[in-house]
Length: 423
Image 1 (tube, helix red, strand yellow):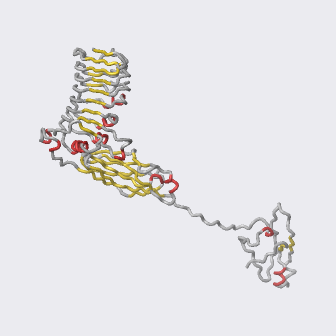
Image 2: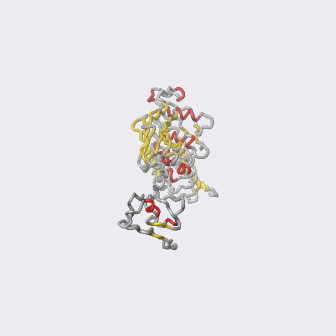
Image 3: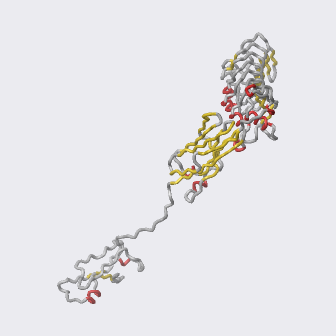
């Protein structure tokens, strides 16, 4: 073991007799190199006391397994190299314990596959060397990470350097598109070596990828379950679309416009800026080349209405299909005229405006018929009582009274505001 003391402590171990990760490494070590030893496994929390460690090299050993929690507390680590070991798998979830990691070297191991979930833990890696392994295919999730759509990019483009050479690749559309896209000007990916070799499974052993005939590439095709959906306010709705293509496409939902209507303007003025990427959706691939996706919305509001686009993407191209959602249920209510009052006002006619019409008409006086019992109109107690003169003529004594006399002498008269009977 050789140790260099100073501002940046370096510890290097290259003793062929070391069979386990040493536990007496100084806590202020910044760079640790364990090379050409007999170390076969990296246990849990193997470097827990090295919180200031920035560079960790475990190269050219005999490591076959790494515990998922081997790198706990390595918050400052920037570079991890595991080249020249015997790894058949790598604990990708362990990268969560190294948030500042940028360089990951896995050159010259025995990795035979890359799981799809590895893409969840590689966003910050800018240098990834997977060369000289046994890899045959790349998952679509990694391709989405390395070659994102313009709408999915946040901030400036992150450049990555990838080492994919010296693997027995299945020369299909995916790996071919990686090489072709990496050659474009301004590509986010740069390959260390673009001379990728096709595997024996195609009967083209040793053939360069650029010389292979790739006939399986197929641009995705999108078919929505319905192009127009009308649903009541407050209901639940499911939007679905299916896509086919090779490689198997990935699906993304985007809301591109809001539904405009006379009764919804106030709601839509405060809606989010469009287009919006929708993340709350489900998708599944029942077989290679086929994928379906749904979005479920519960308790529809007017804000949910609009145009949704189901976008399918693979390395061969991009396709999308629109679905229009309309929310109905509440119509505009026009203001109805007020109903006329059926009961006369309680105040006396003295205080009624001259042009004010009453809700009921006065009863007409028929010939030779005079009312027998007349009730004076009610008087507002807050106002002085008007001078009312009421004359009642018994029918038995006034039978000979003619019609003209009866009309002049009405049963109830108001001196202040006389009224003529309505016809």
